[in-house]
Image 1: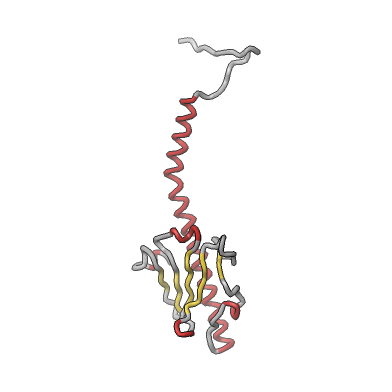
Image 2 (image 1 turned 30 degrees about the vertical axis):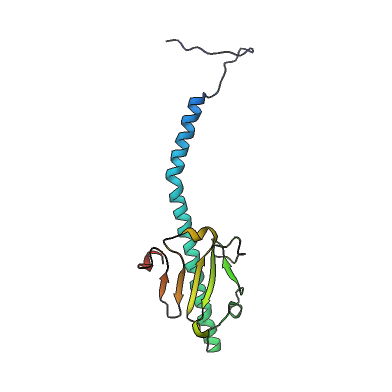
Length: 155
């Protein structure tokens, strides 16, 4: 079978994609995205959880240093050299609430320091497996969410 090339007025062959070829390419890209996107989102959530865990460990370290110096725990972040309203981004850096992924809080039942809590915000709030992380003053690690019964899976 002979192949036929359509030529333009200038004598060059007409090049391009047919509509069918374009639709097949778009379908392949769509399938690849449907497979890859959930895995990517899971990896992003896991890395953001790591930022929350590291921040809680930093708060605990600052509290212990404050205790050594003052014979009591701090009841506010300002005493620890941190912003009073403490929000962090996905890298664990202080952030404004609009771009934050966690709000860090001190657990102060009865006014006494009992630990620190990382509450998910914005896009991280959709992480139903490992929602709020907490680290008690005695080092007990816990989590709320679907994996609440197995905090080691999140920590």
